Length: 465
Image (cartoon, rainbow, N blue to C red; front, side, top):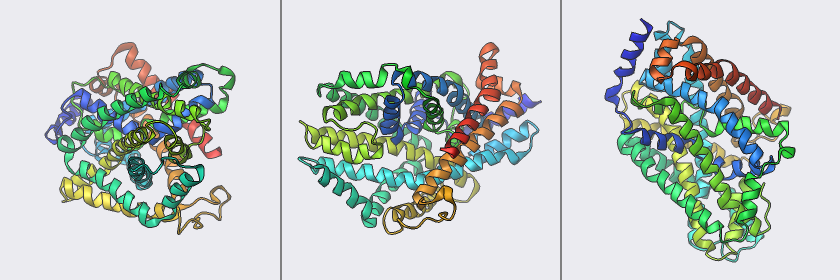
């Protein structure tokens, strides 16, 4: 009985349209996973925590946390064939469980909306730096002049608002065109272009004379540097880098054909995401080492340190322009995926068209982003929860980042793992995911036991950290 209900549910939404191929879905899912964090955060935490040793632990964490939850989220989307909230409700009802489980998707969609509001501001930084690099503004720059450039950007609400508007408009433009004309067309252009730009950047990095040093920094295993904290960082990054807990994979899964093998596809997406992060490290760190710079400078590395290096090296303007175009593409594909779940819900639950839904939701997100912009300058001394010691000094921008990363994403991912692992019929999971025997048992046991414990550890660690 459960299986027949599930099958009818899986076919009910076919008129909504499907990804034209497994490859298109892989590009979209990878585009969602690849973001700003891949370009700067993963490479430097890898180097700080044992290089190749950290990479090995990270890949294990991807297998234990990332792939099982991604598969669970895609299952919900493909089985429900609707927006994430409706899909969660339908899957729960077909398995004779309470529809209250849809709270997982609600939390994920709230997180995606909130993240996009400040992510768009940072994406605007990348867009503005494309122009700066192309116009030669980094050429011959000093630490003071480059610092003034970035500081001037952050201090100007008008500049930030303009670039935030440009970035959000790019995201709305794609999502408003729907699956085939928008999402799929964008990722089939942007993702190959991103990989090509990465390879060009790595090729250029080999000419700096410090490529071998970068390879050693990233890949030489040094288990003496791999502390408990490093393992916890790997756990946390494995969860957040794959867009888990944001209802994105539920939304993308709702467009996935029944013939696509979910397990192998999600493993490939995870490997592609990791490959981009490592290639970014191979592109960035030869430049960092060639100029005697600090590799663990975080966001400052991207918007202050690297522009200084680009401005004082051969063909630096060209390489700098390519790099910030790469950064913009990575942010753009992630922005598209963050807006899609909420737009999908609005389109299905209101009288608005896809275009209208994208514009309205996008504009609301744009408005919330203004609060983040002002918190960087005019409202920099406004700390809404400053009366609590844990939130002392945190601006609106900081609070949005803190609550989404430390509360909403882990909670949504944990609820999804528990629901699919314990409350969905095994026959339904086997039929939809096309998993059998030892492979199915391994995935289910990871989802039931290992993944929830790992997510709770990440949750506690982030709170204490």
